[in-house]
Length: 578
Image 1 (cartoon, rainbow, N blue to C red):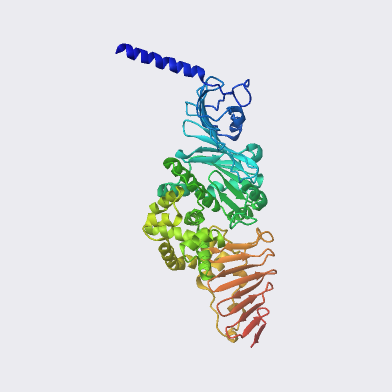
Image 2: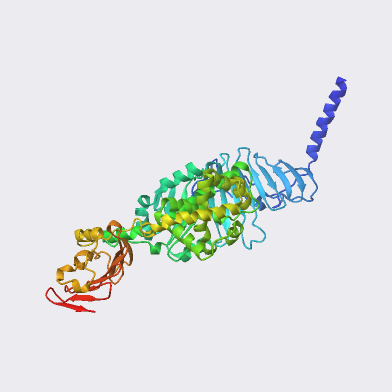
């Protein structure tokens, strides 16, 4: 028995050695005498564009083996390593340095090392004319560098990725964008000097800490990596970089919150220092800083979606376009941190409903996509309703379900237990109640944070705001000059810092408002009254049913509710008219 076992072992060994010797050697396709190339990608992923450019990039023509036939089986590689071929252009080569090269008929190939470092090449889709492949370098700590071909720019974007740690950011080419102009937390800004004033006060104006707290603590959305912010000076340059027109964008303002970077425009509309501190401060107060909150929200939500995909290993075969949620959620979060945004959301939604343009069903909402900017206001109201009624968990659960490819309608019903149409109907009904309070304060909230214009004679102005005017109803009953108020003493304002340079709204003291025209004339106004000051300081005051006029030379006129008037050319001269 022992002898039989010994013979069997001997025959097995001889057979193994013989078969190894007899394995056909497969040369490199470049030629039998071509040198085998070896690669070193470093031990950790590079975290700058300059370092990433130094990464070795394996080419298929350098690694591809030149099989004479497509017969399945074991072969010997040009370096003595073992090769196994399944079919034509589908084989694996265990190389002498320990790396393993695998090629598939689809054109995909990869090169893996025992340490966990590797490289993957994925050819461009056949319908993408002139596109280049996607290149990925993998590392043992779950980081990777991915180069995506951007067809509209005909160049690669290089992305540092560690989805399990909420990281996915563009490695910015500083040769093209310059050195960072500001680093604030994990935000890194790149742009021209046109953005200097914007960046100088950015940290004071934008509530990033509050935003990050809400996103992480309520919804589990965050970004622990860098967030490059690319600041473009001109609309067309930003549009060319992105590759398409953004919904709701215009020639003075545009923003895109991508999962690897944020794009903002336009530097040529940003304020510059004039040397007048009051004017410069006012200019900055008119900048829409809160738009950054919306783009940061979009960025964090997308990065968190990538984490979900990485954790579950589940990804939709095609990217789901879900603008109602993506933009609606971002607008909702921004409106919680910005009074101006909240008023805009409610006012635009009310207008949409009034003009009969609001979606009547959830299907209509999805089909509308970006029409009439629906995702930016109507959808924000819908998100608010879901959050208030079904809880913050419903928002994060919906996002996870759709990240993994579940249809929007099914996902919403799954996380709430209610049909999507019912949610849309109920949210619209609730909006009709909520809008009353928000839109009641439209003017004050929309000007929140604006400069307060000051009168030259504050005591007289405050007295008017408190008491108004006490005037006899009939013009004929007014006998003396002093029975009419001095409009000049009340409504002349300190406009020297802005006259000729600014046109627009200001806040007034104690609930009043102010509008300045570039020609220098201006208007004070409040509930039921307005006072217009024209060049030459002619002042026209209109109350609820009467008019007062005063000229710079002291001439006064009163037009009573019944149309009668009295004019004082001076203190001594009076004239009545019917």
